[in-house]
Length: 235
Image 1 (cartoon, helix red, strand yellow):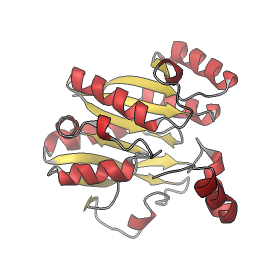
Image 2 (tube, rainbow, N blue to C red):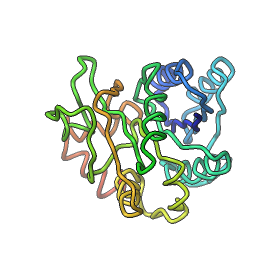
Image 3 (tube, rainbow, N blue to C red):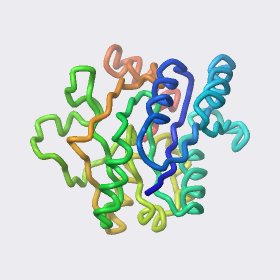
Image 4 (cartoon, one colour):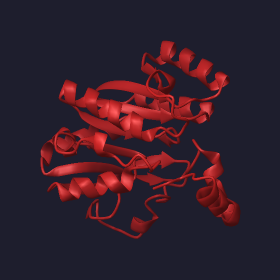
């Protein structure tokens, strides 16, 4: 049982180091890669120190692309190639998420036991263990797992090796910034099921990695001005 685990990073160093520490304490046979997306010099220095302390591979996106942040497309394409070469599934854990010791193992075990699954997500919760964004749509569900045609977030999600073999991320739309909705649809279109594990819960501090997106809740007018006139947050 093994997987490639990735975390894309854009500043928010303190939250990111919490994410990294939790992943490196997790159960399972895992290779961990952190993608630095043109963060500040202070964050970059902190990540370099973290790589030495926690023994993960730090990849600077400036070595892969000269496109300004966000570069999620490049991260996904690079990670897919590596996962396929290693014959592994790919687990994405974003830098505002804290996993438990058994989280990643549970995702892997479910995927291996259910070969028709393309994507497996851990549900996100707040400090009070209440389901929160982006899975508020499932907050009243009582089942331990949900088979869904709705979008899975990449907060903490496994993309099975079987699915990775069927859809080439080189085909991702270059005009978009985020791809969880698109890739969720491609998994379903390629004959796989997408599942959210409601009893596998991860702490999520929404938009901790990109604080400007909190404007959506505190100042929606400013958020949508950024979205439409500055071309940010294209889904």
